[in-house]
Length: 521
Image 1: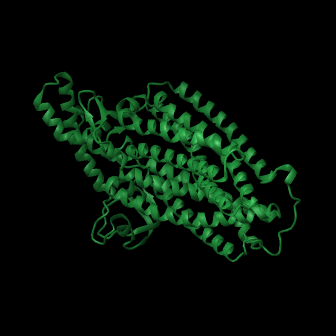
Image 2: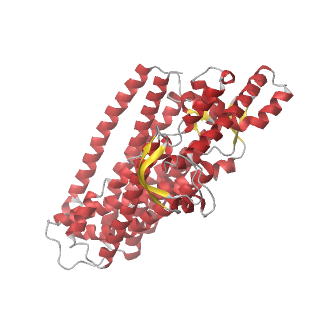
Image 3: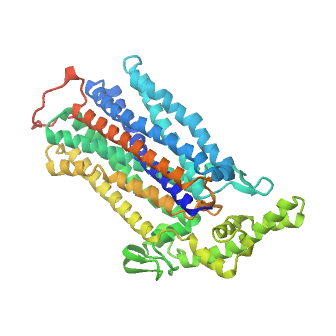
């Protein structure tokens, strides 16, 4: 396999995935914020809440369209760029994506039209139900996609069938209730809620600084402060649950995040900062908080967090076992009735994927020397410096979000948010931060899985299609130009929408100073 083709295929998918993920979090969060705002309108009957909901609905609509367009491109790439991946695991991986399209996507696509065009055609309660269905469909869509992605991280409920040479579903319940998938879903959705809350908070703060649309801005900021505080606290708590899930299912990823080169005595300390040295396989100048990692990762004071060196030794054992499974598979290909080969395969089938790691260096894994097996075992270690610093940047932003929304909630409760200009400026400057954390979190999850396309099952370098570098470079350039153009269009549309404000032209109030006495929402 041409490794240049592999790298270009990964680059193309990474670019489209990261671009798509600029829109997903805002869509997830705004959908439920719209429901909350409209629920207040239905309960109070105050027209200002209808105006507020319709404005943020415009922002949601612009973002929704771009999210759908970029998401479709990603799914097509499984067939164009990752055809062997689709062949090898399509029986499992395709099912959640099919359910997402048939159930969640059709639901949100159907109700989003009613939400935008049904304001004067549906009753208040009817339109509120429609808005809720849009929010539900959007979040269900994320659920099924993350079930598929979670299976890539922890391939539960599937087995390799030597008769078809493919992975097949053995227990769909295990796929559905995969602990990694569930942890990823709640953590990702909560991060999306934070993202939307920061946007609403920042835009509201911008209006208040300019003395414009203060009636809508005050109400929007109040909703954003409460929703954002709850969401930011959830992100930290659920992120802790994600770390606990890694302890049982993705130990190497956890060790790389903490730059834990060796197993430390229980309970392990949490490294706050340091400089991971890949060549020396140690972390220099580290500042460590005793016991904390052991408590987070194992929920105990007496269980160890396994280090990368020890995990590499286990990988070496699994590669050796996988070679035995690979040999049995070859015998079964020649003679499906070979009872001894089938029995041998059943004993070692769990490690078959590890033998495939050797195909990067030899055509037949059975020809690999013990020295090659030992060196290949280190391939299971991901990019430690990136993992280490990405996690700490993401976590720092997460704790800053708690402080930001805690302050916003206190100021809104005391009716001081319209006059605390330093905070309003801070809220505007904070708008990009959730996207930085979210993109880092996504890269952390995917890079931390390397060298696997399906963890422990299919190496990434075996998963791609037989393409040429020229074809991949052409599509990468094309996608970059297309997506860059769409990004400019979206940003301009959203900025224009914010500048025009929440009122129709004929109802546009004249700009004025911030009222001295805030109006109670």
